[in-house]
Each structure stands twice: as C-alpha cells, then as structure tokens.
Length: 233
Length: 290
Image (tube, rainbow over all chains, first blue to last red; front, side):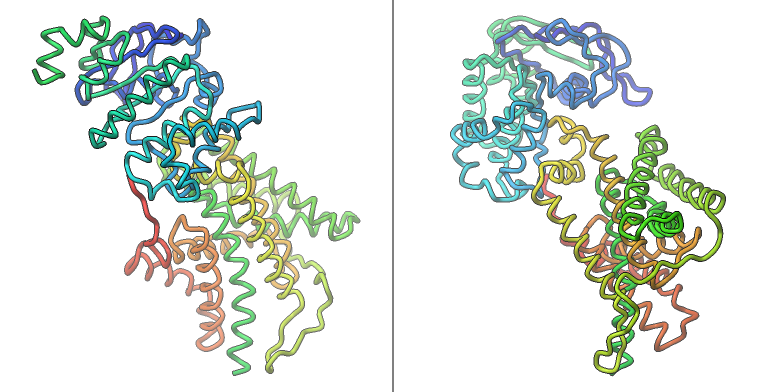
C-alpha cells in the first residue's frame, strides 16, 4: 500500500528525518512508536505532503507520490487525522464532515454522513454545533469522521489518544480495529505505545529521526528495550 | 439636526465603500495572512474600466459587467503571478509585494488609460430627496442598497456553499484544510477574485458621487485598512462596521471641525486602536480552542 524509501526531511537547516524506510501493507495496522520529537508527526506530515521532503521516495500502490500536492494525495486515498484534532472550530460538525468529502467525485456524501453519525452518535446530537464547542473526545471523533468522509485507502492517525480519558481512548482504539475489519489500512502514531502496539499487526520504533527497530506488534511489546523505553516497565 | 442628518447620510455613503474595501482586505487576510494593499486599486479599476468601456460605446450595465470581470481577472493574476510564487515568504515581504502590485496597477492605468478625473452618470437621476431638511442623492441610496446586496451575496456564498465553507476552513486552519483535501492554493486564489469583484462593484457604485482617477485607490486602501483594523483584523462583520464607523467619523469631523482634517481621521483611528485596543471592536470575540 505505502512504501517509503530512505526519506529525509528538514526544518530549515536542521534535518529531522534521516533516511526513513518503512512499509505498510494492505489491510494492516502499523504502529509507529517513539518519544516526543523523534519525528513521528513530521513523517506523517511528509506522507500527506504538508512537510517538504529533502530526499527519498514515497509510493502509494507503486505510484510515486512525492510531487503530488496535499489535496491530490487525499483524493488518491491518503487521509490524515492530525495531531491535536485540528477540527475547523468555527464551522459546525456537519460542515466539518461535508468538507471531509470535498475530494469525492461520486456525490454520494449523504450515505457516508449517516454512517459516521451511526458510528459516533455523540456527533449526531451536535451536528449543528460549532466544532470548537465539542469536548476533546468528540473533537477526536469528528476529526476521524472528517478523514473517513474522503473514503481513504490509507488512514494516518497522529496521536489519537492524546489528552483523552481512558474510557475514550478505549473507544477510539476499538473504532480503529473496527475500521481495519472493513478493509482500511492504518498507520498509527502513538506515545501510548502499550495499547497502540496491542492492536498493531506490525510496528516500527523511531528514535531521533531514524527507524531503530521493527517487528510484529507482539514482538515489540515483549522487547526489553521497548518495554523500558516506551512502556515504562 | 438637519446638519447631523446630512453628515450621517454622507458618512454612511463613503463608509459603505470603506466597508467593502475592508471586507475585501479581511477575506484575503483570513485565507492567506496577506494584507493586500492593492485592494484600493480594485476599486479604482472598477470605476475606470467602466468609464472607458462606456466611452467605447457600451451601455452602463454591460460596461459595469466588463469592469467586474476584468478586475476579477486582475485579482486572479495578482495571486497567480505575485503572491503564489512567494508562498512561505514572511508577511512583511508579502505586504511589500502587494504595495508593488498597487504601484504597478496605478502606473499601468495612468499609461494605458489616462491621468484625468472621470465621472459616471448617476444610475437613477440626480434629483435629491429631502429628508428632515437634509438632502440625499439617489446615487447614495444606490450605494447603500448595492453594498447591502454585495454583503448579502458574500454571506450567502460563505454560509450556503461548500466552496464558501472551504474558504472558511482554510481561514480557520490551513494545514488541516490541506489534510482534509481542500486545494488551499485555489481557495486563496478564489479569495483574491472575490475581493477584487467586491472592490470593483464598490468603485462602480461610488464613482458617480466621488469621481475616480488612476490614483484614487491609494487613499481607499488605507481607509479600508483602517476600517478593518478598527473592526478587528480578520472579522468580516467587524470590517463592515469598522468601515461604516470610519466613514461617519470622517464626515462628522469634516463637518464639525474642518474638512482639511478629514483624511487624518483614518490614521488617528488606526493609531488609537493600536494603542488602546489592538483587537479592534470585534476582535476580542474570536474564540479559539485547541
């Protein structure tokens, strides 16, 4: 689905990603674990095209996407739920979701809207409210719903559990697993490594802009180094 | 009392045009963080192109349409040729670019058209109404109604169409808009086109009252900017109110103090607002939750 080869990216003169290579296969949940500032968000931003890339290649289903503009990548199937939700605060829940479907050419937005509202009933009750007035958990659901409205093949999730109560975290991760059963491919970035690796088929550990370890979710969960560095055990 | 009413009429008329310029400023500023100081040239070109299209034999309605389309094209080219290539530049750089564009448009108008003052005939005669001892020109009514219709059109576009929402979304959070699949560059281009059209309409409406010439845009841009700052930079309702208030202040000071100080009012307002309440009249209300 997604193949990244030797990707480098910098902010100004400071290189933050040094030759990242990773693969996400169709139908997988792949988790990217790493501490603050390791480059996880930068990598997701580069995949979505909002972070410039210095060298390396990115392919979506064997097509080179390096030069595609961000909106084109969404139209071709890469949607992102950004860190910190980033909903359009002054716009209503309904408007946020409709904008999520802006890349769609099929015009069948209504059915998908209903589906999102069934998936997240809390949003349905507040469909006319400004997104900025929602609680953190509701905003996260809205951000996920907005991304799903584009009918992506690959969903990039950046810290979806950040700042949420445990019961909501559970709900978000249950949703991600449910989406997988529907055939969606997921690349998940998390500091909450325990839960994120538990639902992952495979995982990568990123440290200061380099991939330092990879394996199945289970292997990484049982790895001594991962346990001490990221799971607090 | 008649005097007060008279100043109010003329204040609202010029204020309505400042409101359009301020709204144009705000639309572009919200979508792209660019303070477009070529906004006044859109107004000037709206009037000038209509004048010359009429001189070429077109009826006024058709001439006005030609002017609006032409100015819309100028707005699009301004974005494509001057703003878009400088994507990511600092806001000071972008301001200098728009000032350069404004000088360029003024110069081209002086060379290609001319440097004279021009007038348009009033749309519905020039027999003034007398209300409470004050006179009101039919064209002033045309300006007020016309501006109200423009505001209504902009509001409907923003609140009823997905394209309008994509502009609001880009203004609210540009990165999120890109990640959602909105072509933000096209949206910002659209903001320039809409602002240009708003300016052109203002120019066409007001030319029968104020006349126009190649250099008329400079002052209008500054007044519109003052209106936008007064209303709270970035707030479209604030921009409209700020423009109207500025027009009233200007006419009151011209009437009760001296008309020589009329143009100083706008700058005094900018300074006072920046010193005492930098968010403007409506800026404090903006809520941002992260």
